[in-house]
Every structure is written in C-alpha cells, then in structure tokens.
Image 1 (cartoon, helix red, strand yellow):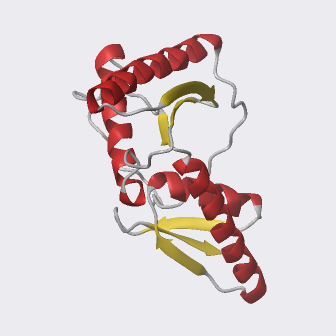
Image 2: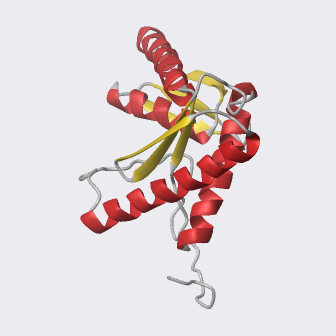
Amino acid sequence: MSVENEELQEPTAAVDTDTVAVEVTDTKPALADLEDLETEGDIAADYLEELLDIADMDGDIDTFTEGDRAHVSIVTDSEVLVGKDGEVLEALQELTRLAVLTETGHRSRLMLDIAGYRDKQRKKLQLLAQEAINEVKATGEPVQLAAMNPFERKIVHSMIAAAGLVSESEGVEPSRRVVISAA
C-alpha cells in the first residue's frame, strides 16, 4: 500500500506513542508466510556462509522460524563477529536483512545470533527485569533501567507485562530505556 499521494490526517485525540499494547491472538504464521520465512532464512544463511568464507572464519549456520520471524544462528566458538556489546552482531544482522531485501523485495525482520550471544543476553535481561519487578512490587515506586536496544527492550516489556506491571520506553535512540511502574 502506498501513501505517497494520499493526504495524511492529524489524529483527533492525543496519542501516547511510547506506550503500546498489543494483543496476540495467533502466533503461528500462515503456510505461505512460513514458506516466505524459510526462504528468508535460506537467503540469509547463503549470504552469511559466503561472508564466513570470505573472512576465512569457521562456523555452522542453523536456520529456523519462530513466531513471525526467521532466525539464523552462526554456531562458533569465536566472538569476533559479536563485537563489543553486540555491535558487530547488530551490524551483520542489518546487512543480512538488506541481502534478504535485495533478493526478495520485502523487508525482513529476521534475527541473527552469533555464538549464542542473544540467548545469553536474554537470560541476563530476564534476571534484570525480575529484580526490577521485585523492586516495584516492594516499593511501589517506578524503576528506570539503563538504555537498551529494541531487542533488549522487547524482552523486558514482555516480562513486565507477564508480571502484571506497566512498562514504557522513554528517551531517544540510542539512549532509549524502559521505565517500570505498578499497574
């Protein structure tokens, strides 16, 4: 759908763009969507395999789909491709998404993991979120977490919602952070 020639209307009511409530009714993609996701994973795997060959680096590539995303993992003992605080991983993920876009003509939301970095991060974030949940429940006061990237914030928001609390993202990238408060 193109909106280039359509006039956009201003909203008639104030909208809080930092608070988003999403109701998920079905996390299984349709069969055609599943095939598209598998295709994305295959394209990404081919691209990354070529990159590893050019860089003369070892690593096995696994692909799978989960929910509405293709996931690609480079299984390796080296964290060179992860970089400091996952910066190289984030850059490679964007390059891989661009390779998929070039091949398919569609924007990809694929997730790339290297050397288990994202799984390790997820576990750390879950512990951090649980500590914040406990603090908010004990004190009733809001808790502001350190700046996080969108992947990290999504993990925290999910845990906070599951605990029955409220969370918002505040600030501007790259200093965007989660603030947790009682419902």
